[in-house]
Amino acid sequence: MLLTIIDRKLRYQGRSIKKIDTYATKASQFNHLTCEYTKKQLSDRWNYVGEYRIQRDLYSAFLIGNSTETLNRVNLDLCNAQWDIFVELHNREIARLKQLSSNTLRWFVA
Image 1 (cartoon, one colour):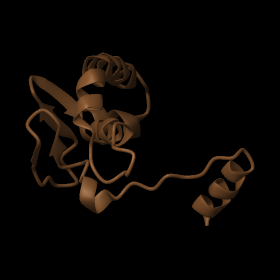
Image 2 (tube, rainbow, N blue to C red):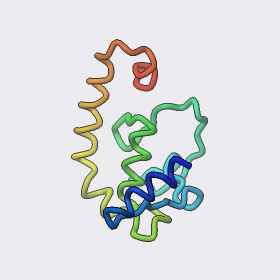
Image 3 (spheres, rainbow, N blue to C red):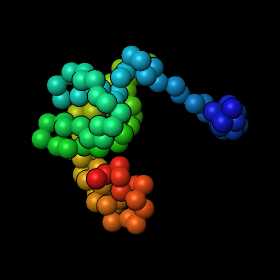
Image 4 (cartoon, helix red, strand yellow):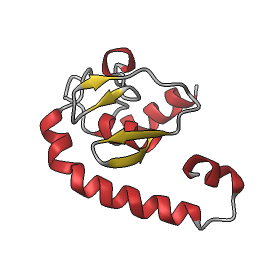
């Protein structure tokens, strides 16, 4: 119901929700540097991507944000072009979250 309301409000502005094919994309399992899929437990909060330790949910969002127009796979060229910027912003955000007093948010980055 929430998505229906949001989509209706977006249509007032000539926009709409885009829905990614999560089954085809498998963003939480994909590594854009190796092009390999690795099944992970939900409790696994971190991915190792190249030499970097990256928070799983932020990395999935990065991959989804760099998906193809058809929303069914990751665009490797976009990922590679944005990777250095993403890593820098990721590390800044992780450092910021570690400073918060919220135990819930700190759990995601511990």
